[in-house]
Image 1 (cartoon, rainbow, N blue to C red):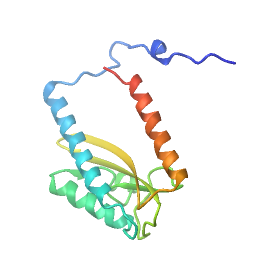
Image 2: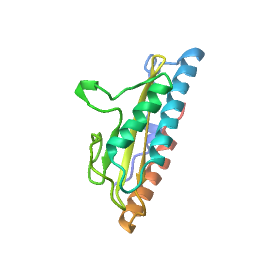
Image 3: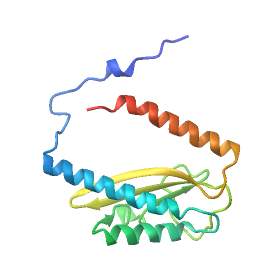
Image 4: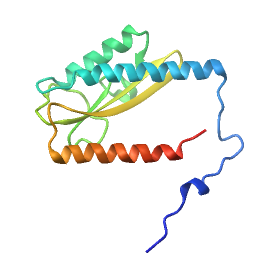
Length: 155
């Protein structure tokens, strides 16, 4: 059996590789990230059976523009919507449409906003209604992996 590599010890910092931001820039980056999270929370509340991903996209668009930001995905390399809605087997970057969410659908909402020169980006999985056991396991496993990954991202 092969020994797992300790990634923490293998990562090296190289001079010039890390770009430390000025306080003003950091503040703007945090504001963009905070807005993206707020829009994600708003969109997540709309996830329920019978709601279309187009309706969720409209919520995202309106909230982003109302906050003085621009939805980054919109028109990026021709992307036609303001957010990504990946339902069930769609891995990522699903395009919102008129499909109604059904009971137990798992949907990942990916929100990116452009505010004051910076992009804020976040995503999260939601369930329309009640998830089945397979969906619960998927959501818990991806969450657990995310938490473990946080061990590797430190200043």
